[in-house]
Length: 480
Image 1 (tube, one colour):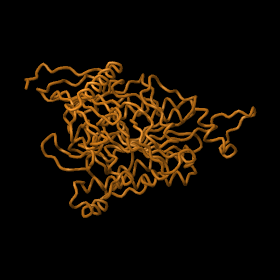
Image 2 (tube, one colour; image 1 turned 60 degrees about the horizontal axis):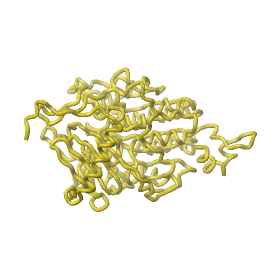
Image 3 (tube, helix red, strand yellow; image 1 turned 30 degrees about the horizontal axis):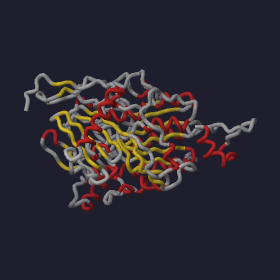
Image 4 (cartoon, helix red, strand yellow; image 1 turned 90 degrees about the vertical axis):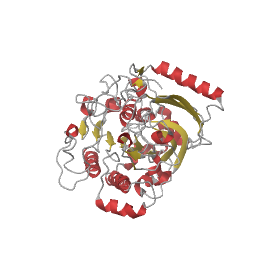
């Protein structure tokens, strides 16, 4: 990391204050701040700079134009909780034994006569796992989590896991309502968010969480901070300011995008604009690494589990959406801005996955950060100077759960242009060449048996190395 600081900061030595009486270059006196804007259920195709034509996202587009955008960014899971575990620990969810989201009944569900039973893995991020807040603590960072937590029940909330402060983070992942007072009598299991205090009539949750983030930055601007801002938006329930909904009713006529969903996306963008303006006003922009990402692909259809489905988002050209191991469930936006280090407008084709963010933050922070062990993620610092696809890694997923939307447990691997999915119920294997077929419309597993076998072996070996709690066969399975 010292070489990285020498390369990027030495030319501005006097301005940045990298001083040493011996003449040696050391890490900056104040390491950069980190602002992680983590959106819930937003696919990359929801954003203008990724090709969205209908929903307006000028602030996020500006962030990309001032930083770097990854076109092959993946979430660590097709659902929320496991991906958040990956971001917070730098480990693949399979290694942490946290492969499913925390459900309402606090037990992983499966149909009565399903072929497999999902693993009885964790519903709480263990205290023994090193979180990103704990990793930065030796450097004097003040840390806060503002918004959705959803990686543990009470006793495993943010302040139990290394964060100094927590606003609105608790066990459940879906807000009872996106409007004050943030409660819904129709869902008694999900009463008012206990860690959300105050507010008033008409207040919208995305705005309120941004208010809290701006207030925190103003209070702690004199020392390095880690601001983890995992918005509840754009997760259901679909609710947004009425003026934005009305705007999109006509714009989206003839599309499959729900106007309320579009309004929620634009509301997120409005609040990204507010955050960027606050960084400018507080003179923090130049020393703040801003990371914008999402936990899984967009929800393409809502209500499929109970047969009352209706369209929500459009993930095309990707197949399916949240809850699926197809590209639509795994492709996410990733944008990083770091003025003076990342040249504006860069685009990387390199493969990246959520656990890379932990490794990247620790790498940037410097030698005193606690790196955690073992890390599955790779630092993206090497990508900052390169737009070409010159990183050759395999990406892996283990998702042995019956999600409310995908309902197809399995595992997957991407290796180069090829992606293999092994479904467990019914047991099938599908192989795609993403370079030729980004929509995963042509299963080539029978035409390329050698590649199929090679990737199955790679996937099996990865599972053996990672050693997760595995699914089991259901003794109540009735057979085909």
